[in-house]
Image (cartoon, rainbow, N blue to C red; front, side, top):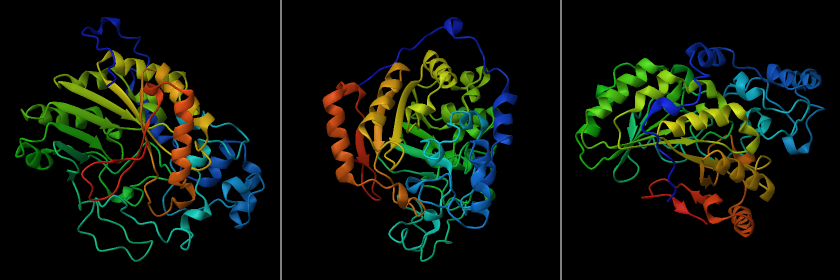
Amino acid sequence: MNYLPVFASTAALPPAGFADERAWTGDMKAAIRDSHQLLAAVGLAATIPQVSTGGAPSGLDEGLAAEVLARPKFPVFVPPALLARISRGNANDPILRQVLPLADEEDAERQAEFGIDPLGEFPDLAAPDSMATEPKPGDRKWIQKYHGRALLITTGACAINCRYCFRRHFPYPSAPQQRTRWQPWLEPIAADPTIREVILSGGDPLVLHDESLCRLLDGLREISHVKWLRIHSRMPVVIPSRITNSFLALFEGFAAKTMVIHVNHAQELDDEVAQAMLRLRHRGFQLLNQSVLLRGVNDSVSALMDLSCRLVELGVVPYYLHQLDRVRGAAHFEVSIERGLQLVAELRQKLPGHAIPRYVQENPGQPSKTILA
């Protein structure tokens, strides 16, 4: 097991840097929400006329599956802090591929074997028979997948819309983006003394403002058997200015606290992200990363090596490499398990054990993740 240093005093904290909450909320408000605008922002504006008429953009080669969706069902959302890390003029940029909507997403034949709820988190839903079928925001408030742990879906909103998101069919526009009344969500956790760890997920829990997070965390601290807190968030990576002093001050009182970030490519980890990781470590967070194996993004030994090495240098454990969850709209990202096993085997020849993520697959109804390698 890997441990990260815990600093009892805040005197050694790096300079605030991100003290102004307006920085991260401003990034949320300024996010790109349009395919054409995204292409223009990354220097591929010449493709726009062809995209709007349905033709294959000239700047996109076969590796980008030929066609960009002008009005995708799953909306575009890319904050400026992440946009700045996309290489201009490169249609195959590994970050761009994660956020650019392609026609393959809505190809019914290609997506036929992929569902809207690949992890079985909404068991009350009837089996979907069309790509338009979606769960309702109120169908699930909390999920207990594994013994001793409960997962709270704190919000349907995210700081970025990843095109392979396994909850991409969650109805983001209709879901509340900030909650102030948490008690009904906490009552079943308080009633089950076997729950030691609570996992905050979404959407992204860190899009909630500090006031709302504070009320939730205060409620969790009042439950004596909840000792551990885990947060799954893209925010420290896509909008690192979210890691403010006021945010960091919210998390006292838990015996263990873990921040699970989600990075798929080393290019996502710039100096601002490194600073955010340092500040989290100084506040006693254990930092773990989980990636998804994605075709055209990180399905090479070199990409996975670069990612693991960069994470280790930032004090982040390369924890999981996930086989893609088979969510409808993401079929074009899928890499075969055979290829994944080959990649991990080659990583073992080049990296020390602590730098090699566990290759896993999550299957609905299983008591734990399946370790593939």
